Image (cartoon, rainbow, N blue to C red; front, side, top):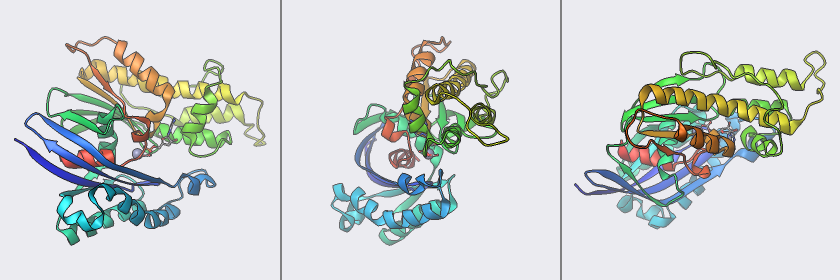
Length: 343
Ligand code: KG4
Ligand code: ZN
């Protein structure tokens, strides 16, 4: 079997207007992809002053960005005038996300599909984060095997999710663990807000933590001793609040910002890795994926790779660990295109 198709993907679930065009060559054994374009228009500056994503503003910003982003994404195929001839299929993020933001992408996909008579494939945002990891070496071209890579164990850590997912074949999966309160990225954002470090919290905490002592503060790791694969980050966030602010007066307590950032980052990474190791032991995956915005964190990437690869497993052969390049850890349309094309 030899099939070729080009796919346009649209991702607007939160505060990034993202589109990508990928070329897929499918054989009996693999999906071979080439990234033709990958455009991300970020709204971070818009939301900074609110300390988080302001949904109404996000929808309006998508409205402004969507045509310029589409034009840029279609440049490699010669623009909209070649859409009908060049593009075979459209993939779009259906859920989860901010409803007003999602609708902008879905409307655009449906309209292009209806006008140019192309099918529209709906993709879950988490599937996009998982499949982004297959372009793990920052390459324009990469290949995904049809079998021999399963089961896949994926840890998706973003602003909205902290989920352990077990995939037994392409796009057939179940959630085996998740957060019972805040998501890991949400904890980074909330702790950054508590410490007046700005938005988004992840990158700024990572930067400050570089000069800090990760053992300086003892912080709780939620559900550390639970037998399940679930997570909890609200206690950790509250602990940072109590250690940095006087709750009665709201006054800042004396603390070292770098040490606190490093201790917090370590607490998050440790519990994420601990639960992933427990899931590895239970399910014996052939492939382990780390994805989602928080996987852009260098401390987590390095420790995840080190600790997961050195842990023993009854799986014969090496467990392959895949982590997307940083620009594909956070929201993007490349992962949506891959998941859509395989679907
Ligand atoms: O996947 P993503 O771009 O959007 C959602 O699906 O939520 O993830 C955004 C989250 C934010 O909470 C942000 O603070 C976090 O990812 N993040 C990071 C880093 N870069 C982004 N967290 C830790 N370290 C980073 N370097
Ligand atoms: Zn995301």
